[in-house]
Structure formats: C-alpha cells, structure tokens
Length: 390
Image (tube, rainbow, N blue to C red; front, side, top):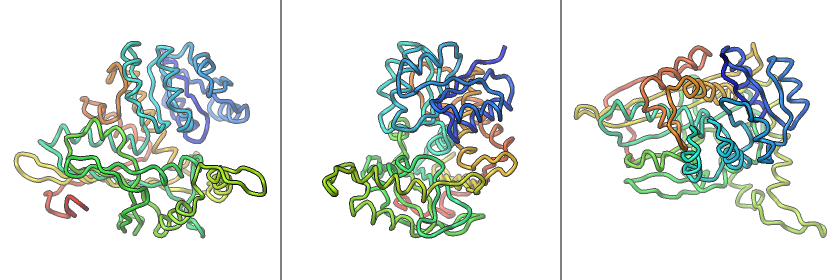
C-alpha cells in the first residue's frame, strides 16, 4: 500500500518535492497550499492530489494532514515553527525544510509525548552537509574541525548584485542580519553575518567569496564535542560588501521610520524592491556549489575528508538546482523515515540520521540517481589543511 504523504507548501522547492515523490512511485502524494494557481499547475504537471489551505492557521494544517502517514514541511521560514507544532499536535511523523529561526528542540518534549518522528532542516545545508558529518563522525575516531561552505547562484552574473534567489528575499536577508554562531576551541562564539570574507577557489566554477552566516544550527547542540566548526555562505566576489552597505545604512532594519508622514519598515520596502531584482525568472539557470571539509583522526593518524558538489539547473524538467539539492535531500530522508530506517521519537536533526546504519548510503544513492553527485576525497590531515582557525 502506498504511503500517504502530504507536502505543505507548493512553491519551487515544495513543487520539486512533489514531482520527485510522484516519479519515485510508492507514494500517495497530496500537496497543500493557499494558492489555487500553484495547486492547479502541480496537479496538471504531476497528477498529485491538491488541498487548498491557509497554512498559517494550525487548524487548516491539521485538516490538510488528517489522513497522512507522513508530512513534509516546505513552508516559508517564518511559518515553520508553528507548522511543525501543529503537525506534532496532530500526531503525524514529519520531515521539514522550512529552516525556521526558533530552536526546534523546544518542540522535542511534545514530539516525544506524541511518539512522532520529526526531522528538521532537511535541505542541502543545513541538511545534506549534516548527514555527511554524522556519517563521518562514525568513521573517524575524533573530529577536530568541520567547515561547510555553500551557495546557490545564478549561472549568468548580472550587475549590480550578481545574485538571484529561488525563495523569499526576506529569508535571504535573514542570513545577512542574524549573528553567526561558530565554534572555536570548543566554545560558541558570535560573529556578525557577512564577516570574515575570504576568497575560495572551487572546481568547475573558479573563485567565489565565503562569509560567515548562522548555518550550524543543530550542530551546536548535537556535535558540541567538535572544537572547531563554522558555516559560510558562497557568493560571487563583491556581494558581501554590497549587502553590508545596505545593512549598515539601515535598509534591513525592522524599526519603522517616518517618510512623508507615513510609517514604513525599511526591511519590508527593501525586500519588496529586491524581490524583482533577485527573482530567478522561469527558465533562467542556476547552480549550487558546496564544499564540506572535515579534519580529524583515525588510528592515531590525521585525516582530511572533503566533499565537493557542483550541481546545475535541470533543463529537462525546468527544476532549479537549489530546488533539486534541497528537495531531493528531503525526499531521501522522507523515504528513510517511511521505510523505518529512522524512527526515533522526538525532534531529530539530519546528523542524527547520518549516524544510523544505511541512511547515509540511501541518501547518497537517492541524490546520485538524480544527477546530484559529490566528489569525495580523503588525504592526510596536514595535506591542504589551512589550520584550525582558518
């Protein structure tokens, strides 16, 4: 019997999840969204069932998932926490990609009480990178340093931003304003977002810039034994400086200002203006680039493991690379939960799955079957090691 799954959110990433589930077979797929147009398009393109629902309301979420065996959350970040809370209250297992700013472990007790499995942050990063770290943690005797650099970029660079977004500009701006939490010498330290810019040469794309963002999230709790950890966002060189100029001038502020006797929130206006400037038009190609570097020890010898990913827009299906890498990681984890490879009650992070036998292999095969392939190399730790404070 097919597993009944309801996908909450029919945007670009939610749509990619729906299409992948339908193509995979073995799922009875429905998608819930407030937009009649988005639902109609997905119904025509995929054959999935549709449910019109205002997902900002808990009762509407629970109505949409009433008959579901598994729920996938693909709503905007600002709605994510309350959506997960509503799903837990309904007693449903869930895989979520909304990357909400609240602490997901605040819902752990409720999920355990209901006996449901909820896996959060199941995108590309956080998500796939966490699974890699969880898996590598079982293969090395100890890990000294974890670095993840990741970015979604347009193939065509256009002035002035040389950037396009496949999701809401407000969610992107959040990355540029929220202080970045890193781990140095075993302690959590705070750095401003967009800080410590460095140039990085990556295979297949060349030189990009990397800067601090708050992407470690659950790793700060689950991998606290690792003394050095950081996550950086990748963009074309010069982007960070432009964003810092806007931020420091106040364009990202949420404090209203008065303009011609009207109260205006700078962030709302900025996001409105950037929406069109950053919008990735249908058919325009993007790419996703990621480097994961893990340094540790095995059998007394230092080891350095590097995962490199360069994924591109799928011309055959018109699916953006960011939707592919995020959505297909999510559907792989959904398969692991549905098949019983991972069924821990409570709130779990992707690194928890990476530690479980068979899950890493399932995810990597699932991605590779869809053309998302990591180049993996392992060398002695001192070879190419930039140092613990790099």
